[in-house]
Image (tube, rainbow, N blue to C red; front, side, top):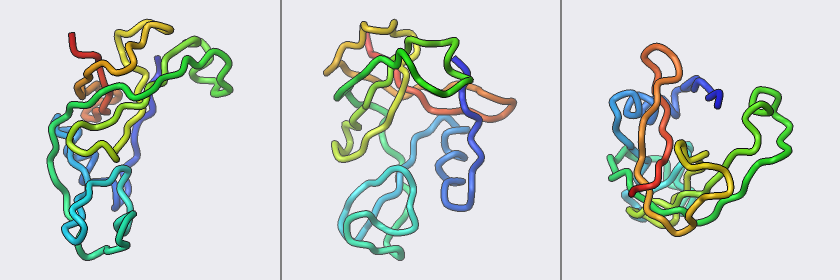
Amino acid sequence: MPKLIPVPDALSKPFWDAVNQRRLVLQHCAACNRLQYPPQQACQVCNSAASLTWKEVEGRGHIAASIVIEDGRLNRRMPDQPYNLAMVTLDADQRVNFYSNLPGTPPYKVPVGAAVEVMFEEVAPGQLIHEWRVVA
């Protein structure tokens, strides 16, 4: 399946730099002790900008929900249909969700509730992306 090549901006650069080092970091608000993803200028909860730092988290979670894309409109993904789209909830903070096609899991075979771990895939020379895979 073709993958998007990220184009980091000033806000997301620390996230993508960590991904390129095979690490998962999220913004952490010291004022209200919350993690957040995707990166934003201020905390989603308390609106503090000064309290945001980057925190490494363990890349483990579980599949909260999934759908199969059968008739998507993105031209570059049409040849790959049907494919999974799963919502992964991070174990470190169940308010943080990621989306993944779950490489290695066939369409219609997503085990909702199953444990997953982050994996990293090279999409361009020197550029990785994060994906999630089911833990056996």
